[in-house]
Amino acid sequence: MADVAADTGMVDAAGAAAAERIPFLRRLSTKLLVLTILFVMTAEVLIFPPTIASFRMQWFEQRLSTAAAVSLVLLRADPGPLEDAAQEDVLRSVGAIAIAVREEGESQLLLASEMPTTVDEHVDLDTLGPVAAISRAFDTLLFGGNRVLRVYGHVGESEKQFELIIRDKDLRRAMLVYARNIVLLSLLISVFTAGLVFFTILQMMVHPIRRMRNSMRDFADQPDNPGRIIQPRERDDELGSAERGLSAMQSQLQRQLGEQKHLADLGLAVSKINHDMRNILASAQLMSDRLRGVDDPAVQAFAPKLVRTLDRAVSYSEDVLAYGRAQEAAPTRRLVRLHQLVEDVSELLGIEPDGQLDFINAVDPAFEVDADADQLFRILNNLCRNAVQAMAADASAAVVSRLTVSAERIGTVSRIIVADTGPGLPEKARQNLFAAFRGSARSGGTGLGLAIAQELARAHGGAIELVESLSGRTVFAISIPDQPVRLHDVRAALRNSG
Image (cartoon, rainbow, N blue to C red):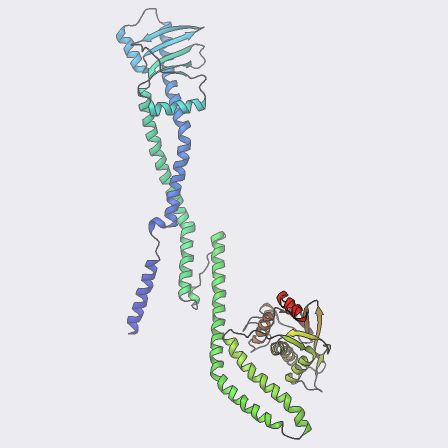
């Protein structure tokens, strides 16, 4: 059965991979190939008009040069007309109907066959501009074939002007052949260029992108498998930077998933023992209630503190379970006398009055904080307990161990200062200060205390910050802003009072 399940899983994975395969026509490389061909063809289209115009001009110039050579020979030869057969041969070789030469304003007809009655177009090669050349070239290409043209101009350094009367049939045929060759050559160049670009981009970009895509897909399937983290290659371009960034993100995400799993396991473990823990604490509460009936002044002074301590112990067991479920109750805010709350914290810390550690409550007895008393107690207890444990681990008869809690008000913000003379926080603890399981300052710690304290402070709209951490002095600051007063409530109160 296990083999069947494994085979089924392999088939499902293969099916999923096949389903994610992108069709050829929708691939990035295919689109790039088509776009490259289109871009090169567009460039060739833009080049084609001046090219075809230049071809037409050269075609005229070649025939005019041939006609000029024939004309010069005829002018230097003995006078006398050529035979009709000879004239036809010369004109056929030039491709003209008639050849003439103009010198000093006088025109002389040298060779002629059947002269047309009209001339459709006069082409002056000496003055024809580029725009007119392009326009007339397309006119011949699209509508020519049955026109008679008079082409004239100077040849070389000769002062004579030579003229041709020709039909544009051969010209148009030559232009069509030339245009066909240009299109075929352009298409060949486009395909060749696109192929080079295609294979280059395929190797340089598409394959690395596919590799990153496959890595993200594989990592999503098994995020807890270190082998699914992409191994970046030694590239100094943008894709190399992207691979390194993806690798770092996957590594960080894998660590965070491991921490979340740790938290989930912690919540499961706490949920198993929480029921029995609350039963034991409930029994302790019942016994402590009986102490209130004892007529001993020392017992009467001690019993209320014991009851409060047991109540908080029950509350803590429930809070740890809530943190394992990533849940925290919203703070129930009231005005709290901070001096008395700090005294309660000091009693819970178990500091001996005649011990080496001094606890100084420097809060003004009249100082009030707008906060949830139980949650603020937990914040102060976590910070103070961490300080006491740090100083106890570094205890020495000659070293001053002092924990001081003070407070001040800045506008509408209550700022509570917790300072100790301990060894300071190590570098790793400062970098992961409020991260559970990573921000512990002592060996074997979980770092949950600061993480819970920061979460509770943020629930009040405040924060905890590390002001200073040196060898011999560590200072934390808790900022708790007052609750904002809603304008609607103020107006309602004014209406009721009026």
